[in-house]
Amino acid sequence: MKKCICLMTLWVSLFTSLAVHADNTVKVSLFSWPGYGFWFIAKEKGFVDDLDIDLTIIEDPYESFALMSAGMLDVTSSTAEYGPIAADKDVPIKLVTYTNPSYGTDKIILAPGVESASDLVGESVAVLEGGLTQIFMGIWLEQQGVAFDQVNYTNLIMDDAVGALVGGDVAAAEFWEPFGSQAMEALPEAKVVASSAEEGWIETALLGDGMYMSDAFMDKKPELAAKTMKAYFDAVAWWKKNPEKGNAIIAEGLNFPIKDVEKVLGKTGEIYKGGIWAFDAQEAGRFMGVVSGDLPLGQKNGQIHEHWDTTTKWWLKFGMVDAAHDMESGVNLQPLKAMFDDYVTE
Image (tube, rainbow, N blue to C red; front, side, top):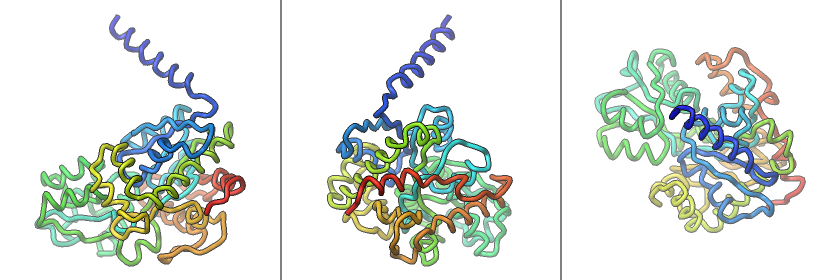
């Protein structure tokens, strides 16, 4: 009887969730990281009339992708490498815009006593498998003369990766802030051997984040998809003018200390070396190649094409995909184009 009641409760919960998914409601997820916190500003400020943002924190991005495939989630913010995997596995999800490159928030840290990449051969390293952290680690290893498959990859979220490095369970790990600083505070003798602030990383914009939407959401509610995009970039624009207030909203939404938010976003609303560069709408449009104009820091208009090719190459090496696919199979630019058609940014 108890099992039946639990199942009934689950189905009632799912039915209620779907039933309240009104025409003006968009269901959005993010995991706990300040770079995605602009959604909290968008929700609180209500920049777009007749748009209800239903926001949920889901720590595993693959859980968000599964919910999107099931029609229970419309949009998620995550790292910007999933498009080639979705295309290869026929997952009905598309990358719709790149949102920020990492400019120092990502670091590879060696445990105390580990001096170089050669010491990692046969050892375990912590990454998020299927994420950009794994590609970052693979590229760095090969740059140091160690084959990407000469180490053992341990799939851990950031909190657990800090614990694994401190506890001696892994010999190295890739972190983004504030977790990299937490690891270094716990292990002062650990060594940072690579950072996304270094020359070569920011120019490629390999390490960064994106926004994803489900095919069903874009097909059935294209106007709402464009409004959702507008709400996000309105939030970024507001934060750039009000960074102190914006960081406070993000800190409250994530239940993070302000100092941890500032480690990622900075305090000025400008490009933050040591954290991330939060794209405004025009910068995102240029990166995705839908509006004209150049980008700073060595990045190019339409650079998403190179990003797609690089991530595809590495997913083939890691065996995450079976074949290479055209970018159009995993990227949908229509919501971004529609936003620019209906909305002129400053």
